[in-house]
Length: 351
Length: 284
Image (cartoon, rainbow over all chains, first blue to last red):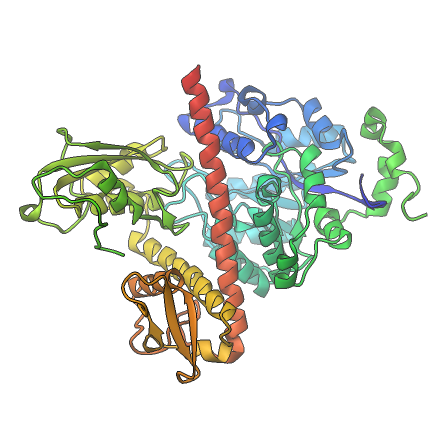
């Protein structure tokens, strides 16, 4: 558990992947270009001495992932956000079923989300039911820019998508994570556009819409929508690592997000393995706004605010009782393996 | 300013322009998402003068009659192979037109490198096709994309102008009713680096950096805002701003600026990472 000035901060990394972009798994040029683009994001926003080689980055073992996330206690729990990309990768890139294997091994630590693609029609709905039955998913990751046949994407406000959102509502899948950020091919019908979130969020007030990457090329549109729709949240993946080499910009973005959405609607995510929480969590926790930024936005990155952003908000959406969870984590396999048990022992900081 | 030819490059129509003149012309072309020059962003990877490249027409209206005979090829590379094809198209078309506006240039050819759709984009723009022909799954109007990005650039530039005026001591009440008549763009002659703005019925004069106002007016005019009738500054929806909503409009402008700067930071980082990996590959 992360500790700041003697206070514990329970960290839920709300955006992780276990992907396979090995050369054997790549189906088309798109797959190769996709992982290379990810790798540019990785090297662009990772301290030089923490960068992976492209080969390491293509495919990493479950053991490595577990150590990166939990080994130094940076993260307490992690939520998988699947990204199938079957058009690019023979066995998919980062699938629900592959992710679920890790949940199976470490049920205390990982949560898996499902996914759907409205272009899959009735078969897609049955698949969503299967994901709920088999893995009891509470959320879905949606990749609106995913290619399928001739189609290069879809929108949250398509009538077919609404049918799937209704299905989510019926099944009790309440957290919808649309990827709205850097994208693979924004044409006019483009995944930069966050306007479709507005419609969907208004039409499904019982669902939470966690816009991943805070719509970064469209942070302004996203915040404007978020200010009006109480069930819209921001996922900080991609924005967070800017703290590393663009700290002023990170401060501005946090200032805007806290100003327009507030501290209860932001979720930390590393986007692992794009970035590694074993260094990222500490940098984000230590970030400060400049005096000018504090004046301008009237907010601070206090421990109290950051505790919400780093874990409490995700815990609320995913029904995690943090105090109860700490007790469970005291003696789970990962605490044993990395000697973390004492971190979770009777709330040391509060005594 | 659009259409203005940079000084210091004497050219005649019989002579192929210098590389620096081409670069100057390209400097006026912006990445529409970031509202910054493609030269400053280091997107230009090569400029070739002369040669027998296939002529192009890059969608410009110029007739061949008033052109020189030189051929110019400009090569560009964007921060990622996945950069929006729509944005890439706009940059290529604008780059081509900017170079063809130079005296001495017959035809310009623009070549996009290291992009997923480099072939469609390069052939499409040079072959004088429209975006929807080059990408048959494009479903909409590219001009709408341009308008939207221009509108965002206007909001960001307005924010910069308002900040400069607020810093100089203007009040929201004064700013919402300002018109172009209140602005003296060249108070000290044509090389003026400042602009004088009259507020409070001319009772108070404020000096602000010239760029902040000129850049705003240029973009406001390019999006078709009628500055001759009505106030100089408008809401993002282009309405006059009431005093009550001034602070909200200012904050929305700030948000748009933060978004543009933030995205600019991401692009710059990716661009550097890509250049490093290219260099590393080259060294192997």
